[in-house]
Image 1 (cartoon, helix red, strand yellow):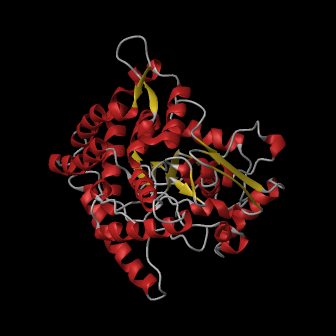
Image 2 (tube, helix red, strand yellow):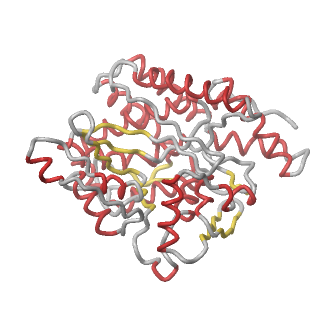
Image 3 (spheres, one colour):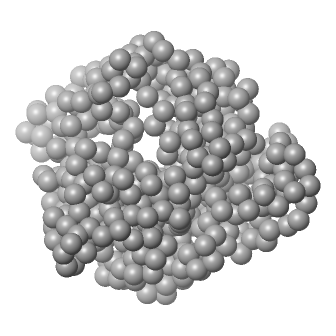
Length: 415
């Protein structure tokens, strides 16, 4: 969306054997090539959820990319919303800023996973991902600072919701295009597509000449271009994706994780999220009656704000359910479930263990990307002002990230 952000789409890997190792190698190769190109212009690649050294001038209208798709998207949002976009986030500190364009959303950098799901299992896997998102995000937070302010542990969640919301103030009662959803899925992907079409008007009113019914009658797979385009403008944190490729298939797009701090950290997060989702899915019909949807939603936003210090509601095998538990105390049992989920779906046991052990080490040391940034910043602010400390902190972040070691092993250096 903004000129300082790059989006890289990987090739798919099979969810068997060593998928996270294979995907990690692919990403490392891509980032090395991108980094070499950036270096020719004096730049470098930063894997981070929100760039902590951004200032307000970096997010004005001239920051927007000239790519036609994003220009059309911005125009579609502006057609619905006449008011400036206001971002107001209260955390440890506070930010209150307005902008006439959607460029503040460009401060966010996500690491998004697509999981191919059989149509008949989509509701179970989708609901499991909704439940798994909060505890996995807690250990993966990497966006604690925006415009020099210490805000949420995963500020990206609050920023995204406000920075691209096309609703006018008078229409705030309408559902947001950026949401955690409105309830558990009961019938599969179709109801989620139907909901997105019913609740939100098109931002990009592009109409093709394909007759989808005729295509199906001839035994083909329709592209459903209009639907796919529309779903791409409804930003649920977990959302369905239809693709006509490879005989036609459904994917679950999991959008909750931030970029970084390293490829190794992102692969560990991938293993945790995929494994936990797959394991919860087999029990989800039993778990759902024990946790109303609103608790899963509250869990997600609580974790985004408080990270590993959050308390969540989690379904219990015996009444009363759900029960409140510190998310940090919940992680060990969920890591065991994630291991079972991976191994039972064909991932090598050593592959699962190697990546989940990194998450376990992060949990035991209570250090994720956000905590490291905040601790290093606090150390530097003992000897220098905030603006300088942010620059110095991020220099050290970039150095450690380039080294490739997981974030829980990074040192905290004095100013």
